[in-house]
Length: 279
Image (cartoon, rainbow, N blue to C red; front, side, top):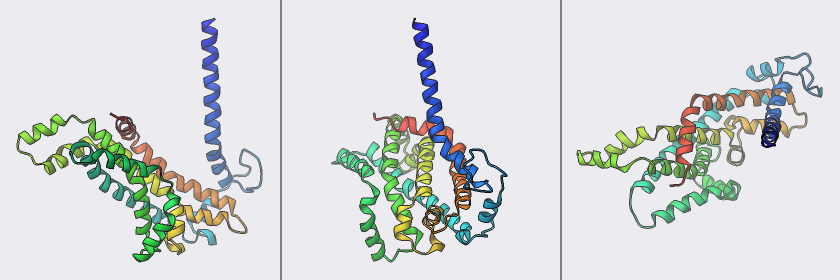
């Protein structure tokens, strides 16, 4: 009886797993299939007379909606890597302070920082717009980087501080005994040990900046400064939606994060598992 129940349980788990996989994978499959269809309105699950015409229209900028594809793709990279730089530059030092230094209200400030992570980004859209307007940063990608960096930093601080807390402090104390200063210890000992967590948070910040839509829409009006998500959104709201071209652009745009993830997957898993556990 137990063997029957065990087999039944295993079968149910497999069915649920396959159903979830199909649920999440099908939109990706449909995006790729639609991008190579000769007739995008053909409801066939398999592509009939597949063609790379949509990809050629995107890559060679042959459609009016793709005339600035490469510059917009470059803008997306600028925002993504700018978000990494902003987030890690701030979160590394904050995490070190929260995990190693003793000062008043340390716990309260740490929890307040994490609390800002759950605030919906749309709540601060108007204040951010006014702030960037006052500083003359509208239509400047720096304003988008400041926004994405601001919202991705709290989570990075939390993970890095928890990861840093898992590093034995005796290592640093031994270095201090040998005469090393705090900054030397931070650069020579702490940062190398933080490599998995830094890569994990760098990947998180990259994807956050790569996918950003709202603040690009609010802060950037010139099409030359748009990123790809905003360009795709503009296609969707046009009178004649170029579905094939839109899906081809989406497929191309989804490749860099996948490559980024698989290059650093091993470090990401180690960094997140060790850093996301409250100690």
